[in-house]
Length: 382
Image (cartoon, rainbow, N blue to C red; front, side, top):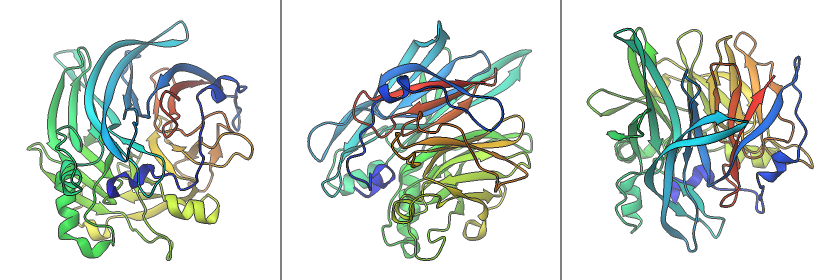
């Protein structure tokens, strides 16, 4: 399945269980030490993670894989509260996803992925909403002879109190159609796999952006539910490589968007450190020229954020740690994008999502491409 290329494991035999983290010692960073606490385990392909100022934590699971080359799976978005060092579930909202294998490889789950929270003040009280982008797209699955799956490829808005879900837009099918109209850009088009979402304020107005790992695009989702491509992430950087695969969008201190890319193939071919971060103007519609290289030297970025101090954070799913489990997170000062600090050092296997809580702690989903039940969430504190 072309849409599954985001989670195609180029290296056979990558099997990591969440118990690897539990057995590891706290990891140190440059400066104050970071301590790693396992706060949730037993998840199936956990991807996005987000928080609200009240301390709630939201986790997206794409779902478990099954037997055969293709099938349906049960994904979810769940709300948790931290109690006694563990995340305790408050509600769960289910979504139908798919799993697929390609070329005889391990099956990949495609379901709930990126999460973003957006809070505003209304009548003297804070009102927060949660947004989730579901990966893959219906039209591509139908073209492959699969069933019609209503959830995949859609952007949803969830009520943070109840978990009630509202369908905002069919992003996947819209971008799939865009790639069909621009098939000259890439040999694997048409293809769409929306994965990362950011809801933020741009010049005082709420704006929603989606990173599509299959189409290599950043699109803006308008209030009427239509999608407008604002950036095509260069697919051949450096020359001779292939498939940029943007996975995340974060708003920087300068108001621009910063897009992290997986760059899976070139990292496995050349030994890591080949992933890029691109700077995109959120107000531009010149998609063909709206991406400037900001930083490089990363390994398979799957999510990214900025903290209140202006530091850029990213997860690196397949960062090589020698004999330890692959995966890490990095911190980059905004004014010094070549200054990459690694935090995990082998205790954050296959990370998928990252978010910063109001108390300064970090939450990271782990085991995002691990076998069923081997995913979890860790909390990092100083």
